[in-house]
Length: 362
Ligand code: NAD
Ligand code: GLY
Image (cartoon, rainbow, N blue to C red):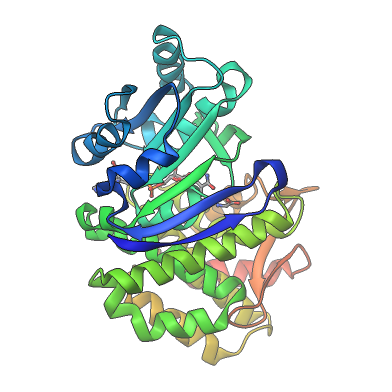
C-alpha cells in the first residue's frame, strides 16, 4: 500500500477525513479502524460486490456485517431501491449507532447516503467510492438522493459521511470509458479555480490514462481538496457550491434529452464544459487561446464533446429551464473569465446562449 494522502473536511461537528491511497482496501487492519461499529451494512451493487465486498468483510474480522447488493445502473437509483435498503436494515435490526458503508460508484454512494440520512432520522455512513467520478465528486460533500420519474436527484438530503476512503487501485477494474468520464470532472476542478492544476493535467494526461498510481493520487487528492474547500464555504449550495456545476447545466440537457443512455454523465459534462467555455469566449469573457486549450485537453483525455445531431438547440434550452439552478425563471449559468476563473451568473445575453446552443447542436 502507498501511504494515504489524508485531509479533513472541517465542518464542525460534521467534520470528517478523506483518505486517498493505493491498496487501502487490501489493508484490513488499517480499514478496520474506520469501520468500527456493532453492525455494518455494506450497500453495493452486483458489479462491485464480487470485486471488493470481501475486502470489507476481511476488515470487519467476523463482526456482524450484511451486504445489501443492489442492481447496477442509474435506472435503479429510485425510491423503490432505497426501500429495499430500509427493508434490509430493519430485518437485521440496525440501530442508530450502527454503520452503513457505500461501496461503489456515484449511484451506490447517492443511494446509500440517502438511506443513511433517512434511516431512523440519520445514521453514520462511510463512503468507499470505486469510480473516478465518485472519488473526485459524489463521495465528498454530503449530497445524497435518488431520482424521480419527473427529475434526476429530485428527492434527497444533505448528509455528510463519517469518512471517505479512496483506493485508486479500484480504478484498475473500471472500464476505460468510465475512467475517461471521471476525468471530465477532474478537468472541471482546474477550470473552476486552479489554473496551475489545469496546466498540470495538460502535462500529465497520458500518465492519468495509464493509471500511474502517484499521478492519480495527486489528481484525486487535489480535486477532493478543492471540493472540500467549496463545500465548507457553502455546504447547502446557497452560493459558491453551484460552481461545482460548471458544464453540468449544458450536460444535464444532453443527458435528459437523450434519455440517460447514450451519454455517460461525465461525457455529457465534458461536452458541457466545452459549451460553457465556448459561451464564455463568445461573450468576450475568455480568450480564444483558453478555449482552444480546454478543447485540446478534453480531446487528449479521449472525451467526446461533439453533441451535434443528438438534440436540437430548442430541446436543449427547454431542458436547461428545468434545471435545479433556475431562479425566478432565469437559468443560472457557470461561465469563465479564463481557465481557473469560473463564476455563477444569470447576467448574460439570451442571444449568446442561443448562439452557443446553435453552434454546438444544430
Ligand atoms: P455508477 O455508479 O453508475 O458507476 C458506473 C459503472 O461502473 C457502474 O456500472 C458500476 O457498477 C461500475 N463500477 C463501479 N466501480 C467499479 C469498479 N471499480 N470496477 C468496475 N466497475 C465499476 O456511475 P458514476 O459515474 O460513478 O456516478 C454517477 C452518479 O453519481 C449519478 O447518479 C450522479 O447523479 C451522481 N453524482 C452525485 C454527486 C453528488 O454530489 N452526490 C456528484 C456527481 C454525480
Ligand atoms: N456535484 C455537485 C455538488 O456536490 O455540489
